[in-house]
Length: 210
Image 1 (cartoon, rainbow, N blue to C red):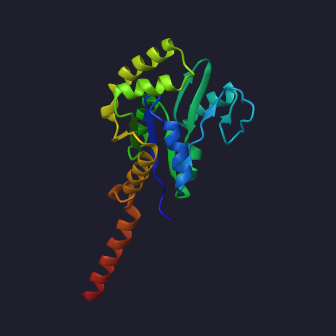
Image 2: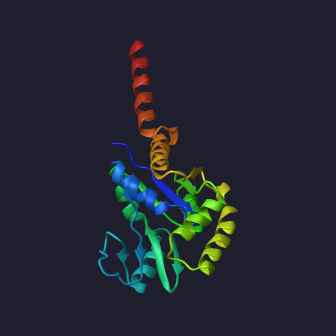
Image 3: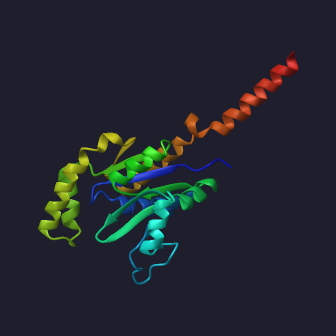
């Protein structure tokens, strides 16, 4: 069984990352979502080990000291991090692990794990992004302005990603995302075991000919 690939999905607020990930898991096998650790309390209906790994501040600090996170950050008085052990367990089982995080965290993971695949999700245009944010009907005009301003900042880091995925039609984008991830398995860096095997077989046959 070949090892899975770690994939990070980032993108503007309103780009449809969450919808893409949900549909990818519904439509295709062999994917696992990374579960983050957090110091915030569970919300009604949330389950430990499914939605998050819930940690005390002390437990979270200990994990930082033990270098147990691929990345971590603090948002609105709570800490969030990606536990390396859970990700590695899924990868060892042959699962391709999808991690949805912000740009800063994505670049931290890439620095630690260079074979991580970074994919940035974007709508086809700025006009479409604003239309989607407005269409949600859940945010005030002021919040939408803030999100659009944040998108300007985030666009400055798009070149750091391996792939830019334009989310125009969800189904087409999900299929493209799946093809993109599966193609990574053919890269030489992910075929080391096969390379070793065939190299050994070739050398063995060569020895027999002598």
